[in-house]
Image 1 (cartoon, helix red, strand yellow):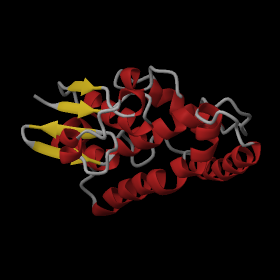
Image 2 (cartoon, one colour; image 1 turned 90 degrees about the vertical axis):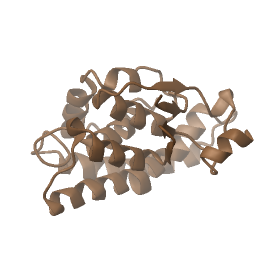
Image 3 (cartoon, rainbow, N blue to C red; image 1 turned 30 degrees about the vertical axis):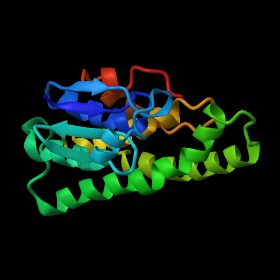
Image 4 (cartoon, rainbow, N blue to C red; image 1 turned 90 degrees about the horizontal axis):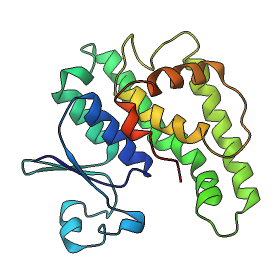
Length: 203
């Protein structure tokens, strides 16, 4: 039985859920992390020593890190297949890494202060929003003449960036309107595979 550990309010779990559903795979999702706990339990730490989510279990195979899970799904499921061309594949990796190291971290402080902090730090929020606007502008420019992040078909780069964009576009804050980013997001968010991943309120 395939299991995915993690709560749906986690942006990283959302990526894994979306990938599994796009791939048409059957799995059991188990709430973990945040208010659900579990991630500090010795049994869970034996699966994922970081105590983070998501973690994928599949017939004795264990994998953590959301973008690694997406790459694994793309390598094993034709519906999410990676490009054969090594340069196109490198561009998929480029955008996956950019999401994980640049786009999502830029909005981290705004998200945490707006949703988790008992007394939000307005200066931290403002700086985080400023930083994220710069990244949103990069993605918007990239998507100006594209339907998908890489190539001419939906793929895992769209999932990773789609989940990040979902969080960004739903923060209770003013944003610069990015028409290309919005157009791309609305197209991919309408896919059946996105329904479960993006169905919960952010927070």
